[in-house]
Length: 235
Image (cartoon, rainbow, N blue to C red; front, side):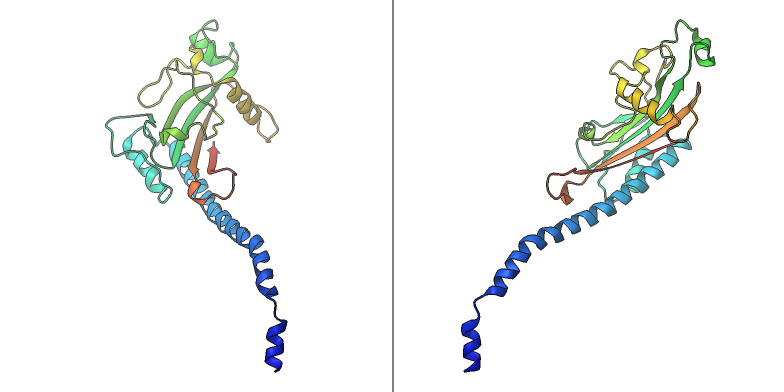
């Protein structure tokens, strides 16, 4: 009789409580899983960017398929696509829209006043890029469709810029197309030409090496937040 009485008093409250808690905790557990996976991926992207920056500053030529394939091996598991092969040098290997990653390597130089050595070498009147940052080299490879999503402190060069197959910029003192865009000039100036970061301002001829990596994370996305991981290293 006691068992019968207990059953009569049971009205399913536990099931209702579980449903209410599950409504809140299941999305929370999913978010924790996604955040954890993306944290691991963020660490991977940072390590890859650091390694590529180190190789780039020590002279690795990433306009060649050999070194782009090396970058792909370093990015194992992140789906960096550099194609099957190409001969010679190709500084802009972004014609495909495959893969989930984009790598941008930039060498930037600060050009001083018209009285400094770089401008006097070409003639002060010809040195149209004085007191500004110019591209010396730019190499980009991976999924070209990600270029609009991947931020870059050095911006995107003018379509009129003249480069070699290795991405080296020609006439960077006398061709205005070699200057960084206005927003990139401002960003670079605030980063390198002020003492806000404890650095002394750059002087004429000083060079900055920048490596930037961007990888999509759409397969591990929760909600409508950012769907990519970005890293930057500069020297």
